[in-house]
View 1 (cartoon, helix red, strand yellow):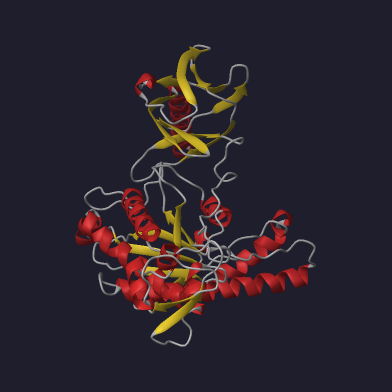
View 2: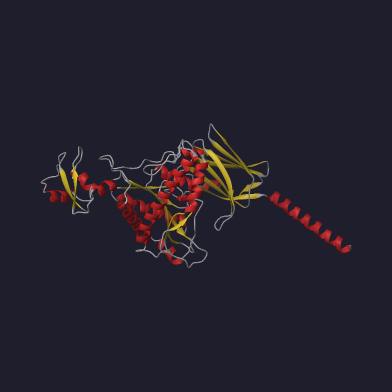
Length: 453
């Protein structure tokens, strides 16, 4: 009996100690230890580093535009004035204690925004975080994505549009190498190089989903590709593993399991039915019954996966000449960024950033250029064989059918010899010599013989 009473006494004492500790923690509260800002074209992300979870409330005010964030039982332990606000809608950040224990933070804004907040658990780089997204609904880049660049001399010779997606960004660093290299930085540099190479190739135009160090949601990346009317979506990443041994580049396409789940998602969301338009032609589910819509979507998804496997195989073949391959064939997985039902989409893992040697290689410009050059060559080889209808590449292929020494082009109104030379990847002097011309003047209806490239 005495033993039972002693046990109860100990339990009561432990419970009292726990309640006292919880009470003291509640009185002590938490604190804001740091602040970071990530401006993006369609939103700005403000991140508060906190010592623990924080209870907060926020509301927006107009005339003038402000966002007020009240953090309960919180103290400020960082200097907000040192934050660089350039490129963001935030003009100034003010703070003051409130009700003795709380903290009020006020953002003075250039215009009204739509706020959103959530908290993140600690990871390998950061502790607890309160994330504030300031969304610009009036000037969203997703709504104002540039139209694809086309060749201007005549209809039916548009550029092939390749959208390059640098993975991660902003508060999301991606994988981190042994020397502290961030995946987000490596892949952004590589994406810029790849864009530069693609833009220099006649008949191609490249677009980037992100141009700087900020984060874009995975679904929004595919939305951007659709806005750009992409013929191909290429997401660039750098792989990682828990041990340093794995190495090599990889190429992924969407798995059939991922395709099945995505088909169901598109069919389930009614707003998608009239909005599924992308690539060069597009698919519309508007006004279709579920059975017909499902068949159309399955056909489109199957065609996109097959095209993805084709271009992925072409790229992998070129990568094999400049880098070690992790796997000999194109792999398939249910990556969210690959789930566009109407745009061929691939994910390229440039290497394992967790491997010390590959981390070192990926940190150099020369190696990134080698990889980007191989990806560009793989893309071009694929589209030279299967060019999208209405593109300059398709026009060139049609005018070279038969595989002979030469092709022929009939001059139309507005054509110049320099334009014909550029479209056929040759020079004016070569065309003049090949056709026995004394100068670069051509006449409507004249047939120009073009040497095969």
